[in-house]
Length: 379
Image (tube, rainbow, N blue to C red):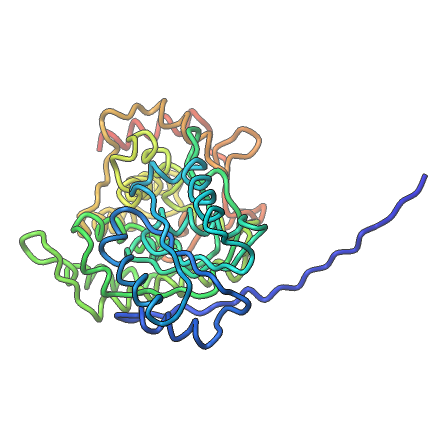
């Protein structure tokens, strides 16, 4: 019998810059001219049907006028279209245009575009570079750092994907001004989650300043100083987590705060709830469960609920979603281990609970979940 060992040790620097500012299209073009990505001859802008008309055509024409070979590929907007089928269609379109390993993807859009484009880039020709240009507050908060890319399946959201880091991220605050009121609120949910898990001072800042994003008649009134601070703090907090655990072996699980129930609620609503709205409800329930287990106080729980309401986010599970269905859907979460639903919990506000095992998540029994859901729905 013969044995041959293949010694493979990889040391990779996946560092990248995040630029926060306004009207960054020209900066993107200049960076490409300066060789931010080497050995690339073709660029593919991937966007959805909404962003295509808002920003896609403008970026396409700008890059073409600057001498780049670039095409735009679009798919119907909406989380329900973040699927393997959509990914395959985009891949076929790129192949038909002779895109190969000398290509780079520019993901232009919200979280759906970021997730789908990053996954496509991670597998196309066994991996090509991509640039992330998020156009929503939610995408800037959730998809700019970490390199988690994925598509949804009928079983659960974000179940199939890869870790693939962008080469650079451009957070263009001008794009936020085109967002519907509801989309801004949705993006604030991930912002509040970041404050809850990593920075009590930022939580207090949101309590004091979140109203500067809205006018009294429920219209946007985006204060540029607040927007820039929110964008920066989202990146800073998430980076501190990802730096310690870039492939989600343990500590990075804390970013699942609000998402265990939230993603299940999102799917059970048939995506009628936006992602941020669903995880806001998930955060509210997780905070209640944490209070019940004495991980946070009643006052801390109330502050979390009050901040969600100040952001005009939902905090109640829709009546048409049954508790038993919600629990069954939670079993499809990627964090399930040994057929047990795992939750992460706050250790007060601005810090996450690490348990005696060293893990940042613990299993919660079906009985406790059902009891807690019933109590939560009666509040």
